[in-house]
Length: 355
Length: 136
Ligand SMILES: [Cu+2]
Image (cartoon, rainbow over all chains, first blue to last red; front, side):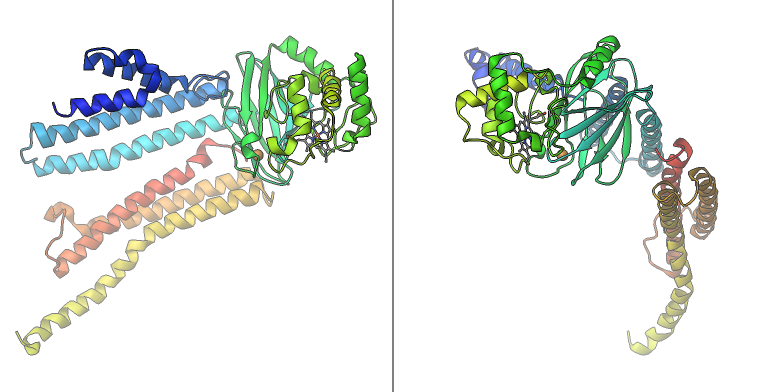
């Protein structure tokens, strides 16, 4: 009885303002029920969303999800069983346990059961690996982990040349796409939790994995191997599209850049030339052929800039160019703080029109 | 109790302990087999996959053969240890007295358990050989 009070206090403290209404409830029971509700809501909210292995949107993620939930359920059963036994023998029936029973318990619970369970999970896990490495059904995508962004090349079936892009992966739904992964200077890891498992990227080596996304949507990928100062800012959008839409998009992505449409964008192109951005960035169809940074030919169509660092609005682009290093420590692009706000807006307009 | 009285007993103990040292060596045989099998598997597969020194399919067949050999060796050690433990006749699951006979059986008991875990380890190590083909 003495325990009920402090527990209730902890509950209302921990739940904070979200529970304000419940704090006024007269009964401690209602308060605790409210706490449980909030706790469950908070807990399960983490399972949803576009970067969650617990909300699978592809065949590979589903296989992993099933493995995970089965292991979790098994662990829960084991935990309850062990504690049940412990409770039973310590509280309910504390009489001496016959030795031959004890021996059998040790033999089965300590030798046979763990060997079979671990062996079973091992066989299950290993049997998933070939699928996750299976060759694709046509399209292959080569991704290179850079400091701290993703160089992306689409390699369609047939002899069409690679389509160069960056910092965003688009995939046709319902097809298995193979990834050829490598890295520039540091080890990174390529991971789209909603679509499947992760795979490390090593300098000088090519690793492979494949993904079969099912549900069209926009998901989030993240570098999953600590790679330096801006590791946490090394993300990307993964857009799963119906196959026809994807084919149309890939065709557009293969085209050269659009000429600036508005007056502001034309001024932006001039600033791009004047500031020498083309030394690092390529914009196909212009004289900008730099290879240091991401290809910007269609940067205006991306959902984020700076490898998931910012959104893709005009203000985001202006902010990026003026404050690069503050936004992303040790970034390989200098900031251009001397540009006037109007110049930044023109530059952003030019890049945004590169759809 | 004087030194004189104790002497013959200690001498006998020493002789038996020397005889027991052989089974002390046998204790390590199964885990050493497991360890060598593991190193062999890792080294062979990486030489085949990363260096392409020989085809991985052949490597796989040879390694499965090596696994059978390793398991046979571990099984044989386990069998001998079971005899030494002699649990069927004595029913002794623990050996609390520390006499020569106890020690003898205890080493058999321990060797048997270590052989068992080595066999499980070796089987787990070779599961990828059976379930995965090629280098992927
Ligand atoms: Cu990284």
